[in-house]
Image (cartoon, rainbow, N blue to C red; front, side, top):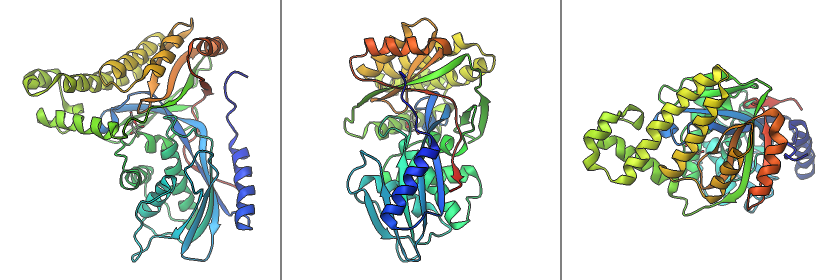
Length: 392
Ligand code: GAF
């Protein structure tokens, strides 16, 4: 099989249960999971109040556990590449015990969610396992946050008022405990994804609309470049800041509100880089709404062209692509039956997403393997469920 086998949720669950029994010498009583995502189009638009169009993946982060009648939680991760140590123990948050971020880094996503879970958390033991590739731009962080929140809902019987409130709490956890000022896309899709659908999110109104994606003649192929260029870690916050500065120069709340006339009027107050960033955001918002309209009519050729234009804009105007992602996109576009291809996620490595006719998937994979200078991994994915609790 040319594409990677995606472990079944039931397989991950068995492995988590087995480890829980080994580590805590008891059976877990609660289990929950939440998916990673691939963004089909609408990149770096969420923090500009624009539109995004992701789908939930069959790869999930899964948490099993039980209350332990103490004030502490003990959490073990089975992730291969999680930074050490893989087990943490700390007192659950309360009026007298506020949590704050510390090492190991993976535990900060968990701590952040515990801190945002305002209905209170009892002491518990838990094991975390994931099939979402870490650092692959498929939102392993959001899947951990949302899985942990869903686990806590089941453990305590106290649920967030709405799915939106839950996603926003997880986003806040990432802002405050992982120092990553992300937009809302990843937590929204991980919380609200539905099998057979992508999700169009209006990041200004926070309205999320399911869009059926169930034509079996086409498929999205995700290609992991297996590279991650962590330059300084400040690129994303800087890009976000630049966009907000650009909007402020034009007297707008966000780039979503800006028009070409606004850009024209204020151009003498902006440098060329800022103009390029604005152009990406404004054109990407338009591409995303157009893409969803043509997808509904199954006009895949136009949809694919919009995906590829999105890539070019991310490469040339937003400057978040890299040599490896450009190579993967160029190779994909050489194959007959490919409609479009683009980098997906924050950029500087990670994955591409390609829309292709189902019957040329193997040809596409073989061609990319031949042309790409690195070692790619492929996932052929159908849109999957959002977060859910699981029966044990
Ligand atoms: C990362 C962020 F977490 C998202 O909110 C989004 O901005 C994305 O990069 C770029 O579209 O995944």
